[in-house]
Image 1: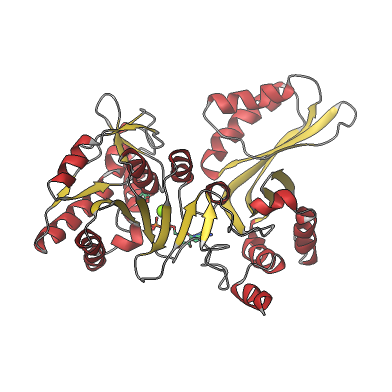
Image 2: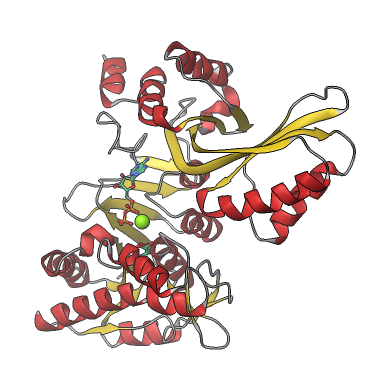
Length: 411
Ligand code: ADP
Ligand code: ASP
Ligand code: MG
């Protein structure tokens, strides 16, 4: 007998009819002799609706904002439990505070600190299917917190780690992890397996199929993760430790992120301490700076360009403008119409010329590269946002990632 955590995303629980489909999946797993812990997202569109309501009421962060946002998941778990009970199964919904899923007090982006397993395991022992809301936790003072958008994935993986589950299944609206977002590239190929490291890069570079934090948990606690579709029986993608028979292609995936903005400080004095002065206020405000490029010095001045998320853009701009004025920089300019485009692959470590091929492919399409950053297993560039889809498709093609490319190679 195994313990399996099954997580269903927003589209999988979008209507009562779809929740009935979830109920069938869950009960099939239970009837096969397993203990099942279910984690649900809010019904699709619901969290966005709640964000809108909270904003209209005057909040876009803080304690009460999380009180509002966490309700979406509560509705889905109640509905699934009602349906399961109606089918004659013993089901029990268990809120984050009841589990408990203990987090820090960083509202809207809380981090899980520990999870109590007693309540869930006792309920499982009594033969119950336990249904837990994704995305929600409780801080040390008993306040409800939420884990950041897409956080239900993290709830599921963290629960699987805490309960030492045999498998964590992430059910979503696509059949697995693809070589790129299948919604913009119709010949994207589903991967059979992907390593934690590559998945971590893909998630953090924009592949929203898994929340980045969930992959960090999976890697740290060695939780086998299976990403698969709620709507088909097709076997999905296994996210696991790198192993011998894993693909060794130089590039295994292409990702994009349109939710970034670029800020340039023009002609700032080039002397020690300037970078600290510019970036310290940002880190103190909890703003993550992503790519940074500094131009060569000219007449004692340089240009400094960096990117932040769209959400942090306004605050980052105001903070940097203040410092830049104090440093007597010439100007601060910004561009929100940019996208970060990345190629990811563990095979890059041993293949030369990958970045060059990326730049060549983009230049053939007349797409200008504005910034570049690399790591051992990825190359990222900033481009004009309007070319995102085209760039994804030509890179996917150039690196031979399509379904048809693989088949051709086999002959
Ligand atoms: P859920 O609501 O189930 O959590 P999400 O919308 O968060 O689902 O994630 C699934 C979506 O992720 C897919 O519909 C797909 O468009 C997108 N996606 C982006 N990149 C990838 C990728 N490389 N592989 C699979 N899906 C991807
Ligand atoms: N409902 C939350 C969101 O839409 C969490 C999740 O679905 O993972 O971001
Ligand atoms: Mg998601």
